[in-house]
Image 1 (tube, rainbow, N blue to C red):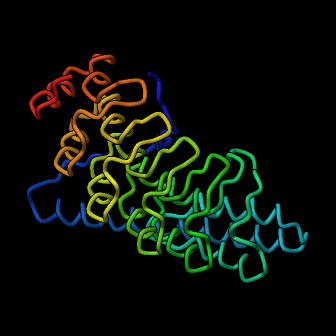
Image 2: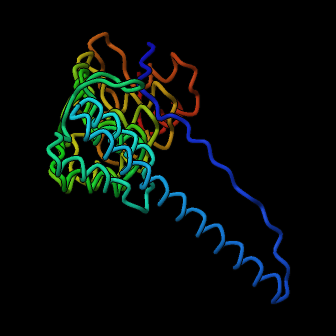
Length: 269
């Protein structure tokens, strides 16, 4: 029954709380603090880009594609959602480095491309830049996963739309038969499910074991995902190759709220 797939790595975030005064002085102070924080964030992005460009320049002198790829991945990792540290990646491409290289590097699964890493981390602007630089939209890693699948599983809706606009295969299945929709359902990413369904994803696709996206959502107890899938026409009583229905999957894992949602929709087994 265990069907755990890759989950999005938790991103550490820090937030500062501020008690605003009701007077004009309090409002001015808040505005000034926000501007300081904005300028600090901009400077951090500029410094990250400068480091990446310096690293790429040093890597180019070695004429080693593997080194360039590793530096490019670091540029992707440090890119923000609002800036194009991917400029450094594009610089490497212009110098003849293949952005679709599949070599493994430390910390990355074999076969993952720069596009895969950017999609996984939710870097929509970087994804667009990589696609413009010639990244293969349906590149697969050794498990058959595409950037669209990983973006869906992580709930990165803006990345999903960027990939679909570039022609990503919406119903592509990995080696286990899992599609982007099933990945989103398993992770309980209802916004990603809505985006994929609206774009025409096959709701009742079955994987190698006969599981649908609804089975995935029920097995994990994701009530909102279940409701979205049912509204999209998911087959309520479809059984897997082992005879498991979505309701049975929910009950087997003691997801009572999910089971109740299925029963209310008409599930009987």
